[in-house]
Length: 212
Image (cartoon, rainbow, N blue to C red; front, side):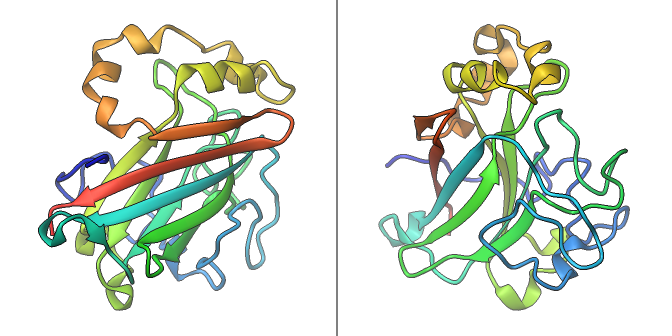
């Protein structure tokens, strides 16, 4: 079946997770953080992400149940903006919290987010971080997570996006990541499908088969 299985709960967590670990505040506790459209700030924070829109579908399935859907799981998503900056983590976004949010998977095992196409930093490739919890009641700390990983975006779509206004910093960082050893090792993280364009936005899907 498509998708991938297994990983330690702290694998690929990311330095800007803000999911209740000991270093950062718990963004998951912010009122309204359970949401599909993650582009705006919540509470007293201000700021809205302005990158190319992306509808991201994450589908969870159970390896132990013939790859049937996993409903009522929490998926916490966070990503960088078009200049590869994380809200709440670095200037000028320290007082903002867009591009963060969580959803509970539906009967089909799907969590859907309206977000933006992330930029890249250094020699990394564009990606979304996600943290999965198997019980909404305990989705408050990364140590209770079932699975952490990333959804990686392909170079073809990325180079289209980075040629548009607002992504100048990311465009300057484009490199041949598809030939890198790290990228080859992370191919299981690559999005299953990416459709759309820079004028109308993109639709990205990723199926995750958990070893449960």
